[in-house]
Length: 142
Image 1 (cartoon, one colour):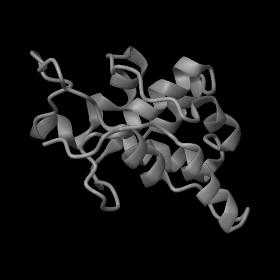
Image 2 (cartoon, rainbow, N blue to C red):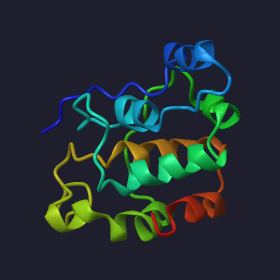
Image 3 (cartoon, one colour):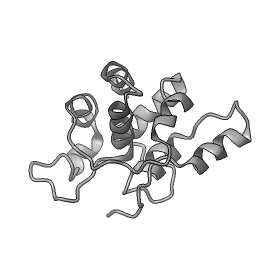
């Protein structure tokens, strides 16, 4: 059941992070889940979500930071599409695949969307802010 309207990363989200202190890390749940996941319900994100785990790793290692995120400010997520790099490295090993991921099903419904982490990484790839090699590194063993 979808409950969030994915709006992308807004300037307000970035200002909130920056105004606290420069030492405050970016919040992966806000970026990936609130910004990009239509299934997000206002909690701390799903622990079994490989997309969120990859974004957490990216933020923790500095591979996803303000420089990369500025490419996406105030831009709504594009229509989700299957990306070989993300599917091979992330979706094929995700716990939601076993329990019924609509996006990855053999006959996906027309409105099926992947997790917010997938959509955020897809947007960063599309913007040229991340390379497929970096995405592979972020999704390894998460």
